[in-house]
Image (cartoon, rainbow over all chains, first blue to last red; front, top):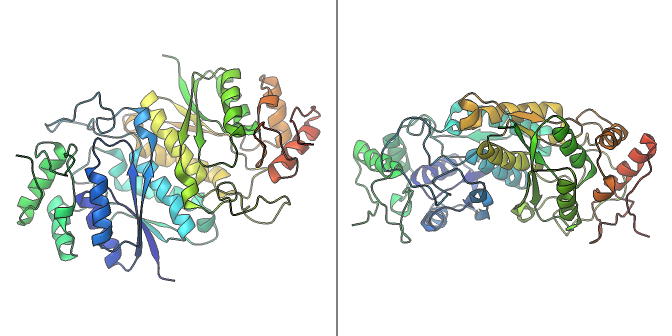
Amino acid sequence: MSKRAVVLLSGGLDSATTLAVARSEGYDCYALSFDYGQRHGAELDAARAVAMQLGAREHRVLQLGLAQFGGSALTDRSLAVPEQASEGIPITYVPARNTVMLSLALAWAEVLAADAIYLGVNAVDYSGYPDCRPEYIEAFERMANLATKRAVEGQPLRIAAPLLRLSKAEIIRLGMELGVDYGLTVSCYQADADGAACGRCDSCRLRRQGFVDAGVSDPTRYRK
Amino acid sequence: MSKRAVVLLSGGLDSATTLAVARSEGYDCYALSFDYGQRHGAELDAARAVAMQLGAREHRVLQLGLAQFGGSALTDRSLAVPEQASEGIPITYVPARNTVMLSLALAWAEVLAADAIYLGVNAVDYSGYPDCRPEYIEAFERMANLATKRAVEGQPLRIAAPLLRLSKAEIIRLGMELGVDYGLTVSCYQADADGAACGRCDSCRLRRQGFVDAGVSDPTRYRK
């Protein structure tokens, strides 16, 4: 049997690149996305398109009721998405999001007998999120290897975060080499139904600057 | 503000006792249950009754699509629930279940500014489950304290497993002291819609023996 990996796929630039990396490392990829009450469905449409383009074996979208806990501008409609960079941990932080997503990936990984879970976290551009740091990823891996029947029986699981120390420009160059079609991806926190980006939120600003720094033309569709 | 805890509440004997312990330790308790495709709804009805009886501040039931991953007799209707004790890890093991539930509890805990998550795992009677062992609980706590904004800002979270080293009889005696009405709880893996237990599955056998060992009369309703 060829080796398998679960890949967390949001439909954004980073997770698309991560899926391409997992494929390039020889894995059959099982892409997992979450419908956790995002403001728009364009991200999930992008995830479906990216999963197809990059040859995932399967793509599943899990419903997840995180919005009922509140606490983030990404899921709580009473909070505005900020359009200026701010100090500290951003309001777009979703409580325990990476932990919840990795845990569900872990459940699927065990059923699939997968050897790895790939996720596109990045400690350079998103240093405000505690669950994007290397020490967090290592602690999750350690916990996961005590949690499951498969690991306990001698088949350890690796949590792979291949973008962790790359800049946005480095991520874009890597993805271009691996054949990612960034025109399919959506990064904007408030994209419209067709996936056109606002060009003003934190995520749009980081992405735009990344293409400039990489010296690559930006295929993103911005709203007029 | 009084201190808060999220308590994982299945509707069974162990989690009901755990909720009573959290209350006795001075916490305002926020009970969290999961509808993850169990074979019957009696457990969730029991969880609601127990949350009321033991004075939880809130009780939420989250939908969780674990059944679509398959792999367990508790969620996969094509597998039979075993009625004989067996060697090794039981087929009723749900992939990464405690990790998934603790992760969602962590998300709620952060929004509530809670100091603790309580869960009713037990390393004595359920030693076949890897995610019921002390080293797993410790690894989850360590990961959780690297994962969230609240922990990173200096408010650590405790994962409390007060039943971890107790026998079933000790759990029952503790719960009786703390006023748990065990007649409300359902432990059976295949209870009927009214909550009447089969009396034959692993969980029923452990519970029955626990009441015998504790010298307490068993309020469980068994099917004729």
